[in-house]
Length: 266
Ligand code: IPE
Image 1 (tube, rainbow, N blue to C red):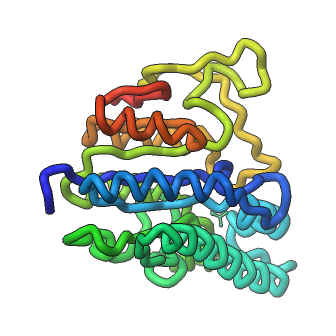
Image 2: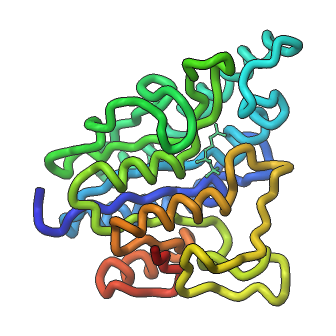
């Protein structure tokens, strides 16, 4: 492990997909963020990537009520949907891996449906896979449908819970970064509100009038991200929400310790 340490970075589903349109990826955003990852890798940082689902997961999960576990009345359709979502997620993961490969980076996908069980931040599974010794293979995982040991049978493990556990348990993490789709960080109001302003420093007691679009989102939306991020910030000094379309800000943050975005404080 070199002295620069690790960066745990989440490519939000709203950044890498079009959240409203089933299975549509945002190729340009993926390409740009992969270029930034390459730059960081070249500079000697060790990366761990997590990504969200966006329209590769939320739409069908919502339709089939996957987050609430098995429902006897629609059990068969649900089981088909679970398979479909898992394969969609692997497809999305492969898009990111392919994009990294194009610029010379090797990433290894670890689908949580294959190694994790249970939902929320206490899920089980061996996190050692993320502890790469050197930087020639980047581990990459994502929010997924996972099995549960209880009567629910399955549920959705959010990438935000993966961010939490990886940041807390893998040594030498210096930065935990959540990349968002179309906003500069955490806002005081939903982005479409004219009064929405960027919150530069967010701590637990700050109230935001967030817009958890529960009609689309089956995990916790921005509220879950904030909850997890505040918990992570108790251990990691640099926990940030940034605009994933502004790669120069990611670089500025890493190089100078600050940029335009939201810094999370404990
Ligand atoms: C959701 O993961 C996973 C599924 C719906 C299968 P996330 O909660 O990490 O996804 P985004 O970032 O909100 O899209």
